Image (cartoon, rainbow, N blue to C red; front, side):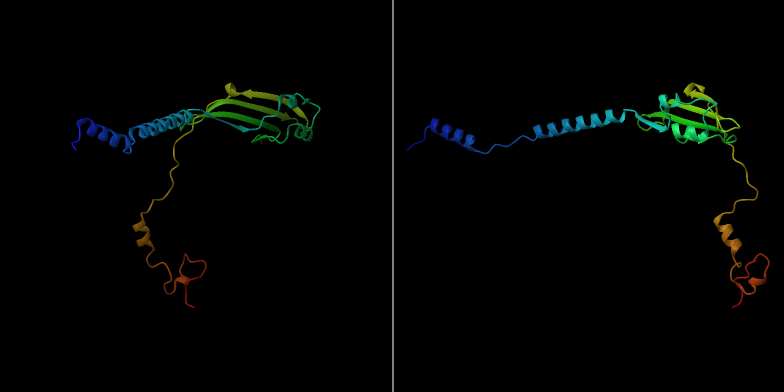
Amino acid sequence: MAATHHSVNGDIAKMIRSAPRRRSIARPVLRSASMAAVVMASIALAACQPVVRTHGFMPATDEIAQLRPGEQTREDVRAILGAPSTTGTFETDTWYYIQRRTSTIAFYSADVTEQDVLGLRFGDDGRLADIVRFGLDDGRTISYVDRVTPTSGNELTVLEQFVGNIGRFNSEGSANRPGNPSGMGGRR
C-alpha cells in the first residue's frame, strides 16, 4: 500500500504536536533582569534618603517653663530637668542642655540641621540666676590650625636604632655602667 502525500503530512503534524516543546530561555532571563533592575533602583533610591540623627538632650518646653530664676537651687533644677549635658569649662556655675540634629546623605559628611542650647547660670548663693537659649544661627564656626609642633632631636630609622643598640644589652659589667639604674644585666 502506497502512502499518500496527505497521510505523511498528517503523521508529521502529529509528531510535531506530540513532541515535547522547548521553553524559551529569553522570557525567564528578561524577568530576572527586570527584577534585578527594580531591586537595584530601590536600593539606589533608599541610599539617597537622608539619615537624620538626634544627639544630646533638650528638656521639654513645659519643663523649662517650670524654672523660676532666683527661687530654685541646683537640686531643684536637676529634679525638674535632669542632669545637664555639660557644665561650663571654667565656670562650673553654668549648666548646658544641648541637642543637635544632623542629616547625612549617602557617604557625605553630616550637615547640622538644628541645634538648641539651653544655658542655666547659677548665682553665688546656688540659686538659678539666668536662663539663656541659643539656636543654630547663634553658633560660630571655628577654624582649626593645622600646624604641627616640632619636637627636639631627630628621628632614627630602624637600621640606625638597631646599630645604635648593639652591645647595650646583657654584656659583662653592664650592671655597673651609667644608664642602668636597675642594676640588672650583671653577673648572677
